[in-house]
Each structure stands twice: as structure tokens, then as C-alpha cells.
Length: 145
Image (cartoon, rainbow, N blue to C red; front, side):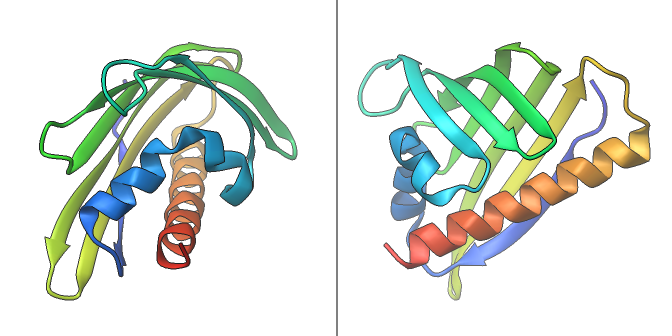
């Protein structure tokens, strides 16, 4: 898989509060612009879903895909992998949280491989745009909760 893109943003909230928002998949259509439908297909053990199907509508880009999540025992990170997708051939992502004096730094890494070839610079620009939007939407949700 290609190199991943990574961005970080500091949020004024505790890591547990941020991870709770990340794990509340049912609420994604309320606060994310592009995610229109969410279905937990495997609830996993405990309070964190293992598999989730998403319906994405970002204007020209529409996709239905399923991700499998691995939650760190310390509550400070989560990773995911694409199980199946229409437009995507592969996706790997993660959120890593690090508490600090001025808030919690959230680092989002993402690699997406589409079924339709996309030139490297265009793919990386799309990944950066997705990450920037996701981090800003997450911060707004966390800080206004």
C-alpha cells in the first residue's frame, strides 16, 4: 500500500471523551458532512464496535464500505482496515491520542487505495482534505458536546 498521509490537531478535551466520540458510530451522520448512513455489523466485545458499514456521499464521491476496527487497551488509539468497499480497494487508518498540557493531540493517519487509479499527488491531496475535514469536524463535536 502507498505511504500514508498524517495530520494532527489539538482538542480541548480528555482522551477518553474524544475516543467516545470516535466510537459513537451511530452519531456520525449528525456531525460529519459526508457520512450519511452507519450500520454496526459486528458489535465486538465491550463498548467498541469491531466492524462498521458506512454510506458516504461527498457530492461526486459516493461509496459504501465496511471497516474493521482494533481498539487499543489503553484507550489512546484505534486502527482500522477496509473489509469491503465499492470504490476502495484498500484503506488503513488510525487515530492516536496524546494528552498534553494544552489539550489532547489527535493524530489521524490514512491511506486509501481506490479501484480506479488516481495519480499519487491527487490521491495524497484527497487524503489530506479528508483528514483535515474529519479532524475539524471531530474537534467541533468533541468541544461542543
